[in-house]
Length: 61
Image (cartoon, rainbow, N blue to C red; front, side, top):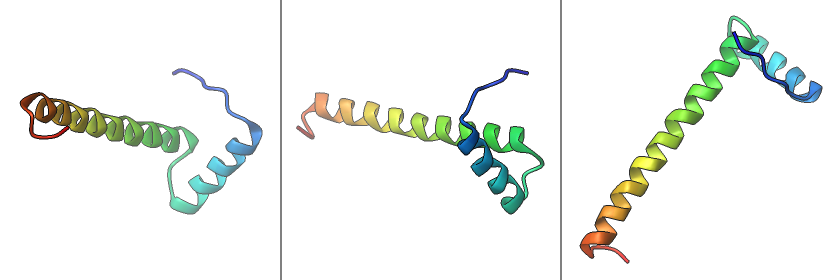
């Protein structure tokens, strides 16, 4: 498993969120947060591709 470096303040915030929300641990929380962000970026990329296609067809400027 890989390790990441975060500030102590962020670590404490994550630790509090893990306890509050019910994740099994910090690793699970961080993996879930990264997965969500990657999924969000994928949607943005797909939307950009559609916009580029529509722009190319002259439907939008």
